[in-house]
Length: 116
Image 1 (cartoon, rainbow, N blue to C red):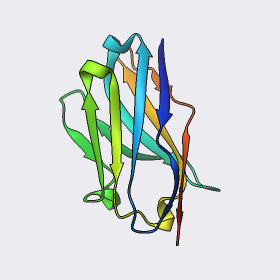
Image 2 (image 1 turned 180 degrees about the vertical axis):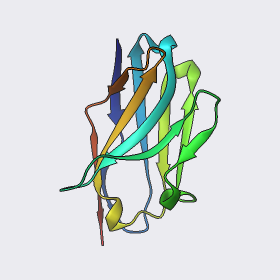
Image 3 (image 1 turned 135 degrees about the horizontal axis):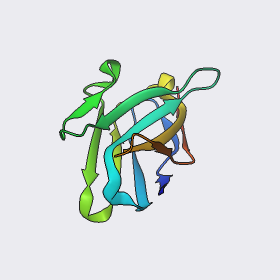
Image 4 (image 1 turned 30 degrees about the vertical axis):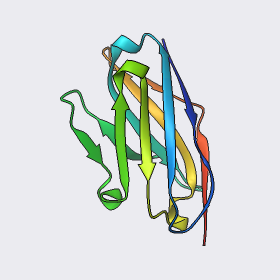
């Protein structure tokens, strides 16, 4: 079992920045792909970014250049730095973890609201 807790969401004006954090606990040594997803009101959950098993960071194409994901293995945490935020980025952001057996775990989500 892996337990994930996000933090860092909030209300920000368009053009502003936020950094989300995800703290993992439990069987963290089984995590092979930490990541971030988001779900906007009335929409399906969508992929934002992840660090794949090879160590490469992959982003949703439309977010490249504005969002940056980083991982701190020593702290069992990963982060999502979001710059130049747009109202369309308003969503609940979830951290995720794929473990070695292929199972996925999710955090409870943190709300990000970008005002125009």
